[in-house]
Amino acid sequence: MKKSLSKKVVLVYNVKNTFVCKDIKLLEKIGFTVLLIHSPPYRDPFRFFYNRTKELVLSCFYLPISKGIFSWFNDYHTTIPVLMAKLFKKPITIIIGGYDAVANTRLKYGIFSKNNARQKLARWNLKRSHSIWVVHKTLSEGCSFAKAQTNTNSGIKNFVPDLSTPIKEIPTAYDSNFWKKENKKAPKSILTVANIFDRRTFERKGIPIFFDLAERLPHFKFTLAGLKKKFFLGSIPKNVRILGEQNTEQLKRLYGGHTYYFQGSVIEGLPNVLCEAMLCECIPIGNRVFGIPEVIGDTGLIFEGTKDIDKVCSFLKLEKKGLSIKARNRIKIQYPIERRKEEFKNSLTEINSNE
Image 1 (cartoon, rainbow, N blue to C red):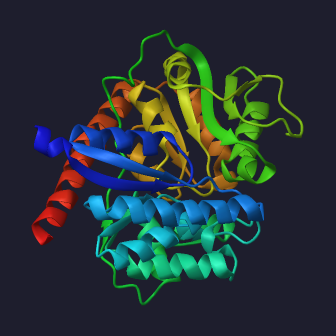
Image 2 (spheres, rainbow, N blue to C red):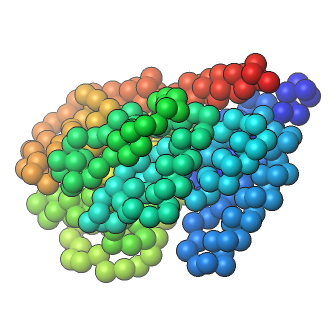
Image 3 (cartoon, rainbow, N blue to C red):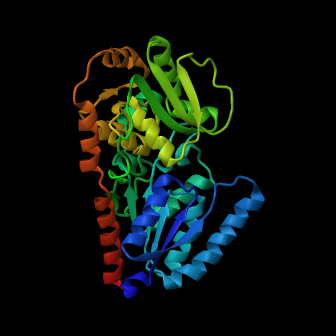
């Protein structure tokens, strides 16, 4: 046991999201000490270059004593670790989560939305990494429904057509022992959760559709959770409750107390909140883009953008038996913690065998 705990691996990330924290715990559970390089996405020049210096120094210190590197998302924070991994002859795996595989020029969203240095570095990183993980296959191959709905281009293979780095679909995973219904669900209640801090995120997460539904269904109760900053939301329907950021316990209570979960995102990877809500027996309603329809399957409703708003209203008015339990079971089977843990084990075993 002591020998396995002496193993070290580096994890580079820009935002400490829930899935980053889960991966840190998974790596620790399989016996690795995780050396962290955290580079928040600062825009001001001083802190930007401070991050690059920190990445250089920590890479020089960590890499000689590590088995390899995992980088959550492909951005500025990935470039120096990729360069140093090459120098120290250590493998680096880039985990693609969403914004690093899309381009929407209207929303100015995605690494590939502008032909600039950031995009060029992202391409360089992908070509020189040891392997690439995508949380859903559409982030590799592209999503035609996102293109049709919002003119969103996607898929790293489309942005980097000469890419030869091995790509593997490794979805995120969810703890069904924690995410479970523990309170009574309110009838005719619909929840959506999104970390909203600007108008662009408001639109990207499909909140205008959510508000439209609320206007059409005044006898339903709607909850929007995750508002990070107060900004002008426009006209908010009277039956919509607005909540700020929620911790995991608060989220579990929210999921458990709502009958439906709405994922109206127009751009997404594999939405964590949708999977968590389904484990808490919410009946899912989601837009047919990226990983959303695969998560939902036959356990709820899949719609196609604003044109299907009447279809969503009709679905909500129908009686639905057994879908809540079916939704929970789908996530338990499709996205178990053990599967992702095995992928990390296999990746690190391959590294060990190549040393």
